[in-house]
Image (cartoon, rainbow, N blue to C red; front, side):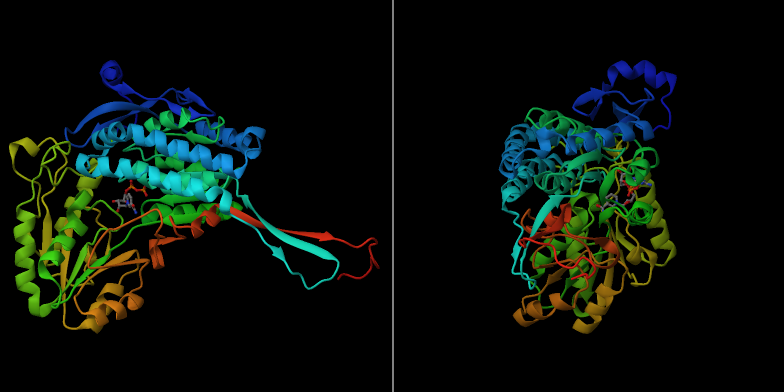
Length: 507
Ligand code: NAI
Ligand code: MG
């Protein structure tokens, strides 16, 4: 990430793929004319140039979205026609899925094996919310006041600012774009500065489908230069954010100024709880996938293993054996199991936490450093790392690391497992591994989290609400209900009386 483009970089610009932003249906440079480099985490080298937007671009994009919101072409569309456009977008995304996956891998380093499934699955959000667009009904209220006809209707909120992180840009953006457009809003999308390319490519696909200009705009750039002015712009009615706890809280505070609606999907410190009565081989696979899939860079990473003391040593041994077998390498290769982390600051952050863990007295039973293999020196790799001897009060058990680092915390009995799992400010998700049916039925209600997975981990669907308890967020994404988070309800009163009675009395 460069602050300003050096002359050398400008000179080499010919070899880097140059992108434009999408504002009001036009492909444009940033108002300042500046670019910044985007890197490939596997090579450690820049591969593209992204327009460096600022407040001016934000203002143009928000005004374009606001104009589209009130345009006949968009406002005048029936809900069924909006739905049809979203389904057409789903079809178009399906056609481009492999190419979009490749761009995602180039920019964020996640495995092609995973990204290709994700881009293939993406279209379902557009189908699902496209289908919902014309099924949102108000009500006629059997009102207690005679001579009145009273009904409710759902309306869009307005211009939605969607602020997206780098871990799964297309996927996490779909969770916002699909319901927001189904509800009749317009959008200004701000990708992460580390991974802007895939959402710009998405906009190219979007453009082919026939939405009116300005319905979706993409402004690229840094958090302070694009994200901050976007989340306080007076014409933005709602901010939908996914990312870090710190930035989420900042946005919540600044949006209060003009009482914008806000939804936040923030981080987690999710516990994967394994009981002695679990199917051990399945639990080992579940815990490994919970923390090492996507290199631990998911909000739902099962970053705390809370394991019953009587099986601790045996279980950790099996975990280490499986972690040891993981293939680190080129994320495009089908045989690779762990790719690099997405960006340089993230690599530094993970290595910092590994140091902190060691200083706190935890023991790395595997990993705890960067790999030494020659072929992995350019990329931002970290070895899969497991810390034993962790107390839940340690920083590595309380703070989100967002990397392939697992903390193992033993417990005696169910009550202690629940207490440890809940002893965090976060509340995103938890995993539960047990074959005891009564325990499996009893425990989910006691866990202070938005999602509980029993004998599985990380399952997600467009149909299933997702979102955090406590400081993991505000509001839900996916599922039927949440489209109403992108709408506001209006009540209309109509008098059926011929004559207005005594005007000096309120009734
Ligand atoms: P971040 O929360 O700062 O960035 C997310 C998005 O917010 C990006 O588009 C960024 O440009 C934008 N942003 C940054 N500052 C802003 C501001 N003041 N106003 C409005 N928008 C702003 O996350 P970052 O720095 O990329 O990653 C840091 C940590 O965040 C990670 O180490 C991880 O712990 C956590 N994270 C959590 C994610 C999740 O899915 N819950 C996703 C990515 C990161
Ligand atoms: Mg990148």
